[in-house]
Length: 558
Image (tube, rainbow, N blue to C red; front, side, top):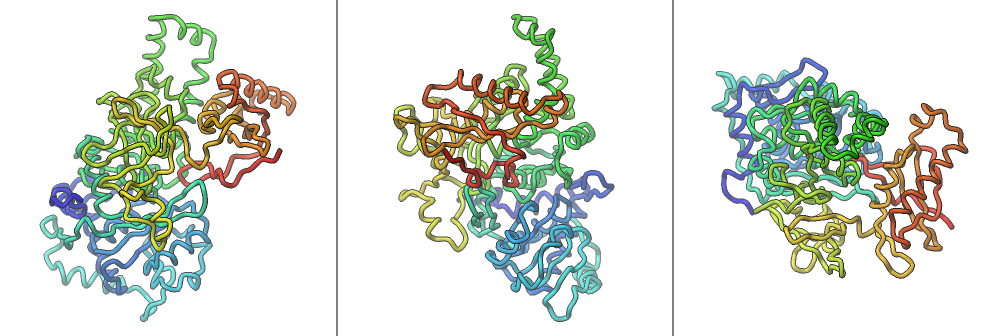
C-alpha cells in the first residue's frame, strides 16, 4: 500500500489544481469549450455543494454514463474528492445493463447523457435520488423533496462559502487514504455478464504514479482522448495521469473513426497516443497496405539498403499522420496483430504494447519505447508497482498469468464467491490469460485460458494467433476460430464488404478468396492447428465497448 503523501490519489489533484490554475485542462473537441484547471476546480466545488444538497454521504455511490466530455471529468473528480465512490458506466452498454449496474451498485445519484437516458425509466432505479444531464446539468428526474435541484441556491451557497472568489489557495479536498474504495468498474468482458470491480484509490494512484514517473504524462503534455473514459485504460492515462501532471486533454465524444481521429491528431499534435489495436490496424490497412502492395514498392522492400529508404518515408508519413510530435504510441486493451507489429517494428515506428485488465485499474506490464520493448511482448511488470508470475507452466513455459501489487482490485462487488475464485490461496490475482515470461522478464500473452482449444493429441491451440493470421488476408475484416464437436477447426469470417464491392467480386469469387486465405494460413500452421473449413459471416461480430469480440455468443455445429 502506498502511504506516502506524494502518492496519495486525492493529493495528486489538489496539488495539480493549485499549480496549474490558469493552464488549460480539458477541451471538448469540436467545440469552443475549454476549461482551465481553475474553472474545472470551481465546477468540482459546486458539484460538492450539489452532492450535499442531495444528501450524499461518504462512500455513497454516484454513477456516470455518457460520452467523453468535460462534465464527465468533473463528475468523476468531484465524486472521489467528496469522499464518495464513482461508478463509471460504459456509454455503449444497453439500457437494461445500465439499469442493472445502477441498481446493483446502489448508486444514489446518476449523471447521464441525454441520449443514454432515453431507454431508462426512472421508476426502474428506485434508489437514485436524482438523474442529471451530462449535456447541460439540467435535472432529468428527481425523487427528492422539493422536486427540483435549486441551482440558484447552490450558486448562493458557493458565494457565501467563498465571498472573495474561489482561487488556487482555496483548493483543499478532504483527506482520503489510498486504502479506501475509489470506484466500482463494471467489466465489459468477452465471456459473460459484467462484474463490479472494487477499485481502491491505491490502484488508481499506482497507475497515475507510473504515468508520471515513466514520462507518459508531464506538465504541458497533450492527449487526444478517444477511448471511453468509463474504461480503465483511457481513464487512467488520457484523463487521470494527464490531469495529475498538468497536461491538457482533448475529449472526443463521437465514434472514433480513423477519419475523425487523424483530423484531431493533426490539429492537437499529441505528445503521446493511447490506442486499442483496432484503430491502429484500420489506419495501417487503409494507409500503408495499399502502398506496400504496389509493384515498385513491394519490390524495393525486398532489396537490402534500398528498403531502408522506403521504410523511412513510410515511417515519416505515418508519424505526420498522427500529428508528428508524439514520443510513443501505446497499444492496450487487446493484442496487436503480429504482422502489423512486425512491419511497424521494421520501419522503426515508436509503438509499444502494454498489458492490463480492469481488475488492475488497468496496467500490469509496459515497457516505454526508450527502454527497448521486445516485439510481440507486452513489456515487463511495472517496476516497484506490480509483480507477475506464471502458474503451473507447461514444458514451453506457458501457464496462467497471475499478478499482485499496488494496482490490484479488492474484489468483485457483492460477489464473494467469484472474488475467492479469482485469487490463489497465497494472494495472487488470476488474470485468466495464458502467457510466458522470458529470461529478461518480458511477458508474452498466448491467449485466454477459456478460449484455448485442445488438438487431437492434447496439443494446445490458441485461436487468437490463428485469427491474427486470417485477419491479414485479403478481403478479411475479422474472424473467429471455433472448434466443432468433431474437434475440427472452423473459421467464421466477416468479409470486408467495402473492399469486396470496390473490386466487384461475385459471391463465388469471394468464396474462392476465402478458400485461398484458408490454404495460405494453413501453410503457416502446425498440422493440429489446421482450419478445416471457412464459413462467411454476414456482419461484424458483436463486441464489448473496448472492441473485443464476445466469443461466448458464437458456436459452430459439425
